[in-house]
Length: 292
Image (cartoon, rainbow, N blue to C red; front, side, top):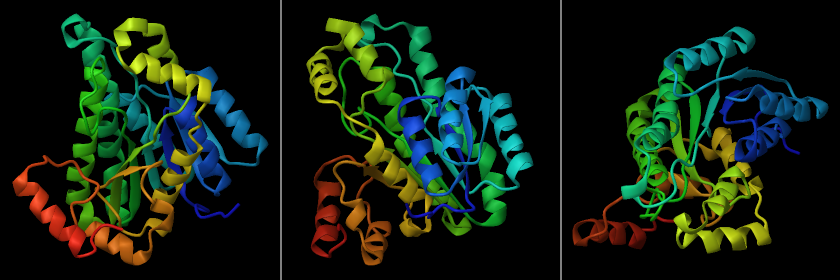
């Protein structure tokens, strides 16, 4: 295994299970030192035990990412333990209410935004003074189903993830002069607790139910998404920033340094309204070789 993240300190939220645990395993294998955060201590300890048995260096801190105080404590503890923060993976997230908006519980809808969107915002806001001061850093935000297209029955989750992608693009623009890169990742299907929640929701999940059943039978891991996240945290991704990258559908493994320069200069892999006004310049970018 290549140690592309040797001497890099990375915070991973939602690291107790699912995609977050897969990301922690991949980053540790590539040499990163990790601060693991999630709400459940037992799950964090399980992830940490798995990593330490493989020789990784990590610490854990139970954290509710929607709490300003707890997020600030997470960042302060990381700096106190390791002296630096090179990367942040905002993976913590919840599915929220499943079913049509008219039947959704308002409190659960609000809580979904608090965790998925506000949580990522608070984490970025807390680490950015340190990264900006060092003039280096890489942040990866986990997108999800509904970010780029409507997703019936999952309005809270979809809205939070679409907003997170636009937040990613905006903060990336703000940080270009500080050499801090911010990207979003669409991880693709993975057999996690969120999949179980869809199956348990039954008919309320609508057409998503049959998709979930097929996915459960087929099986899907988060390893490819974890590998993409590791790549984005490493020097190999250069200064690529402000993009939504699909772990499964984009040819990120094959992108050359020239491809990264082209992508950085175009609006490819970003959220855009599709109409004549926007499609024309996108077509021009494709003709000019802007999309790898």
